[in-house]
Amino acid sequence: MGLTQALLRVGAARPHVMIASVPGGTEVRLAAEAELRRRGWPAAPSPADADVLLIAGNVPGELDDPVAEVWRAVPAPRARTQAVSPDEVPAALDRARSLAGDLSRQRAALPVPGDPPDEGEGPQAGGGPGHKNGGPGGMQMPGGMDMAGGMGMAGEMGMAGGLRVASRGEDRDGLKLDQLHVPLGPFLPDWPAGLVVRVTLQGDVIQHATAGFVGVTGEGRPYWYEPWLRAAGERADVGEAARRRTAAYLDSLGRFLAVAGWDLAAVTARRLRDESLANAPEATLGPAVRKFARRVCRSRVLAWATRGLGVLSPAEAVAAGVGGPALRAGGDVCTRYRQWCAEVAEAAAVFADRSPADPGLLEGPRGPLDGRAAPSAGLVAVLPGLLAGAEFAAARLIIASLDPDADELAPAGVGAGHGG
Amino acid sequence: MSAFAAVLVLLAMVLLVAAAIYAAGWLLGVARSPLPVVPFTGGLPPAEHAFSRFHVRWYALAMLFLAFDMEMIFMYPWTLVISAVGPSAVIEMFTFLAVLLAGVAYAWREGALRWA
Image 1 (tube, one colour):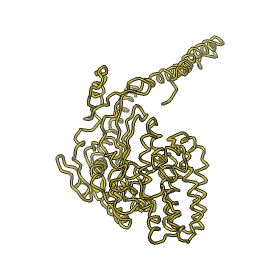
Image 2 (cartoon, rainbow over the protein chains, first blue to last red):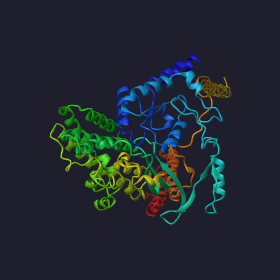
Image 3 (cartoon, each protein chain N blue to C red):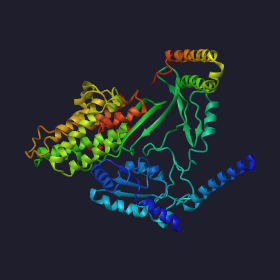
Image 4 (spheres, rainbow over the protein chains, first blue to last red):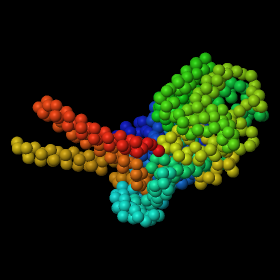
């Protein structure tokens, strides 16, 4: 008992934290990421690796089940905590750490068979649907055998691990192949909050995709657009708008680079993003941002890995209502991240500009927010077309290179109905 | 100590270490039973088991792999006897390689290496 407690405390000294960010929680997520970096706590990419599940923002009703599903997959010792405003983040993390390192509370919270899941902070017992399948492990072989036996009959359903096995459909080469329907999101690492993409996979090629946001409440104003929305009433100055724009693009770039596997550059992007938001002095931040943008822009490996993926021509972009850098880039994933880099470097030049911004000339990070459909609704609308025919890994890069933002959408936002 | 005794000692050690690992897990773990989970795709339940049939092109790729594999298997003993047997071994080996490479070239032409 004493040894277990000691081991728990050692493990909890540096817990792996999975941040589940929900629409409207951008500011909390940024605070949480900055706080994790300050403390040196690693971010967990999946529930299996997580000790602490930090929910950033107010969970809308639509996302209750996905949050519960993620929590169910976190192995003990574990702690669940929530922050609905940036100031609550440090306290929430402290609470979670003390909970993750406390043996008696961990043991008390272990799931008891047949127990209904209890609500609130702290370890929770899982017991909902999908949990009592007995796990996918032991039954794989019988399912596979069934399927092999039933090869001749199209549309026959076998079972494996309590789940259906895939049925077949036409492939592009005229042969039939198993179709897997895989939902992606809403809580993946380096993934836009609230985005759900449902793909139909044959092998690793996406045959069909639908995309939409879930859990968009429309409460509060979109974080990245604050200076522009404010510029209409009280004047924001050019420098402030430039900082926010830089931070928005660096946030998108950080995600994109993390998905592309360039972790070091992703960390740099996020550090610069936080410094930009924290009003770091222009004399040091400006050159650092420009240097970073130049380095990413010049990388040949990254260009090779992304060239020709997700080509969005300007005409298609305009037709779908896409504005901002995705329209200005007018090309593949490679041109889109280079556009971000170029605009970040441009914005970094006017950090010190204190003149009032002209609302007529201002445009948010993802396009003009002019009362018509939000730019991110356009980005989501072009996703199915770009994803069809792409390989699975390329799909993540394409989504990261567009990086739609749920905060822009109104409750009855354009893309909201597709995913649910 | 006979060779058989050494094998037995090794077997006993293997079993002992495995048992110790299980015991440590049982005694020190917070939860005594493993957590049954489904694959994580972001919080939505999977619709189907990920077990699915491969595209037929992977079988062509597997045949290609076999061609290279057989090459290697043949070459290991060949390197040991080449000096004793002389030029005839070299001729035999390269004839064999040519036959296999013809197969590879054929598969390549048929598009076995074409992706997506």
